[in-house]
Length: 594
Image 1: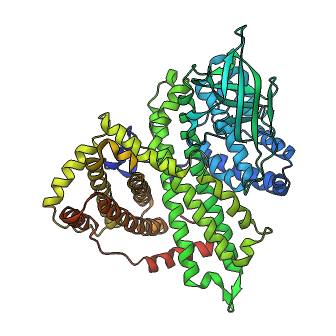
Image 2: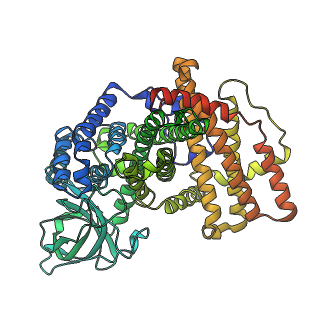
Image 3: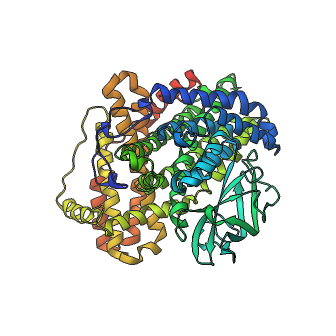
């Protein structure tokens, strides 16, 4: 990829470290190979998937199977599978580009994602040599199709509360699995399921379960609000006979597989959210250009322009953030030796380091998609409510993303919880930084931001990090071990942390681009960054006030609000004018532009 400095960053360290623009990987760093696989994916979706989307929506899943096999022929199922097992063994950026570009395929993108991600990766990362040789070549080609079975009727977000059991038979040759797994993507046609069950009712473990094993069946197709072109059924296990050699990983260590795979699922959902958002913006822009009201195109109305620009600025920040996370994976994997790179557990560990970043990407990008698609429907007016318009399906399809791979609420709680664990273990000196900040604020004099491009944005970003430390430090002091019960405060901290990650990603991406090709050629990026940082900072200020009022009272509260004012003092920019400038470029191109 690009020349990035040989640095390895700890997960969550961005809160207390200052980064250079060379430290991150951005979409502008894509190689010709990345662009080629992006084009292959785009052509596949446009030429093969979209012409039969109505048949997929009608649950004619023989088309899904055929399309997945065609994707296998193109190499679009084997990007994450090592070459020695029949895959392409490409980098994480290639895998991410495929995920972004296939997102236009609606529910079919969920079928593809479930197969290549959560379906195949448990074996890539945790399978032994025999399991990899047996399954991976066929999964990479599409000869076998995969699914992932974790959720149960009684355990959604509480995955470890699963009731499915596994008991070794008397001969010691097979585990007998009993239970039900709910809402399993690809279950109408999957050949191989990664299934979680408790051995003897207590050791949470993972198994590779084939559809043809005795005792394995599926229920009826679920009637869903959206993603109708993906299959969702219950997986039923009634004395299902699973050979002992199909235990995946170690007995009782299934949680390690589940949580690592969820991290992958989360950042891939985020990338799909970015791809879907870009497409929704394009559909909306084309519509407002051709739709006339009061004698002129509705794209000429400044309120329409404001909507387009705000949508695009959110897309830019989220796109910058998700590829920043992919870059973190690349950098950490680049530090592994050849032996470690062959050990899937080392790869999973490299991804697990960035659990915080994966969770933040998941909830910000899926909410960005919901917001963008909602505005796209609004711009279509009554037509947006009609099924013959693509935007109606996009609206229904987008909603599930905030629920699966861990609800956005669960992912929000993971962020401050993991940060505090890292702080308590001494991995991140967050509490020490928060303490020294309180002393610094007493003596702090107002600063003025620099006048250079991005000067104000860097100033706001620096203070935004301090605002998080202020809120987190005070909350930790007051509640100590009971902080985990104060979920409203934790969620505010999570949202502030995610905003800082997105703000910084946008700032560094724009700075990197301007360093290479100047300000004029990157005007749109600069405008996006200015708008996003300004509006995100305003949101952070409101959340910080809420935290302070929840933690302090009386004179202490007034003193802390005074400290907050020192950190939030700035001259706002004219976002109205800047948004009109952004919109002009989007309207002319009829798509998201950078």
